[in-house]
Image (tube, rainbow, N blue to C red; front, side, top):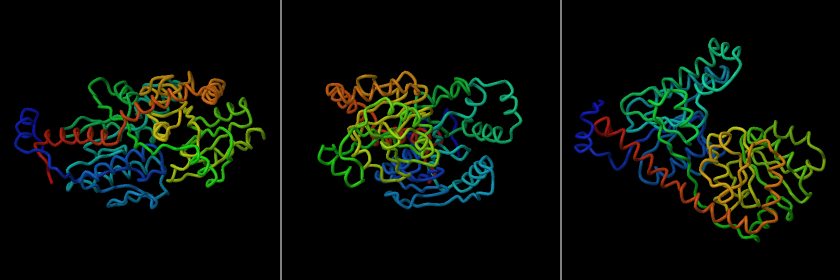
Length: 400
């Protein structure tokens, strides 16, 4: 039963949050291999489970290669339906499956089941009702069942109700939510975290390259993405054409579109690109690389460059609003930030600077340590536990 605002303080004193919470975590797919938003969920739930909280995963799929094994309740949706109907069916089934029996329902999905609704991508209402578009396209969106379904699900997701919070993963997403739904929607920002990796010595980098079948010599640029085209692969290939032959590119997560894009490049570029399919074991590729390139066209945050920093790699990335992570770094001190994601000439110049300027590399390495300190997973988990505690106090105590 919910407690009204006037009684919340007294209820909190009488019924503190339990040391061990029962948490239902709702996500489309659970596993590091599926992308940055999914990896965010895995690492957050790892921290919460390690702290003694009881986490149950509700998802369409659970990566069998994931090293974190939690109780799993599948939400099966037939592939025969269009994507927008599948999203609606998932939302309805997730709401039923998580009703009762949990202290907190933590959702990363569009729908209405969550006590905590984490928004990872550009809000639907912002995309279709705030962003500029042709009048014809906007009118068509008003009668499109697909757009209307997504808008309706999101409206229910962010609707104010007792014991409910909307969380944004970046300042960019929080700003877009406010523009889409007005200043009454206040979404706290809890950015993704990262675990500090062991430093990679030059000899270890050489051994890793040999193990992966990569060239021992040359500057190896890395791009890790579930959809490399959206993360700026065409721009990287254009930059590569302007750089010496000993500058190489490794793309992890290469899909059919990425392979076709590389195949269309000139032989001088194509011969320097190494493609790896989607994998949950990305650490060796960070260990093999010399620098990370991220001229993304659309990232609400951008976990891959943050992970690259944890392996000691200097990072080149798009500015906001194309990359939300750019708002969390100091240009020239913690990362190199382009003026636009499609400026291949700037990207080529930035790569050449990192190759030739040891002082710049050292400065970025020191700055990255400051970034990592601000984005540690235990701190992210603590912020969510504070949100959970606020929700439970608002309800008047834990329910299970």
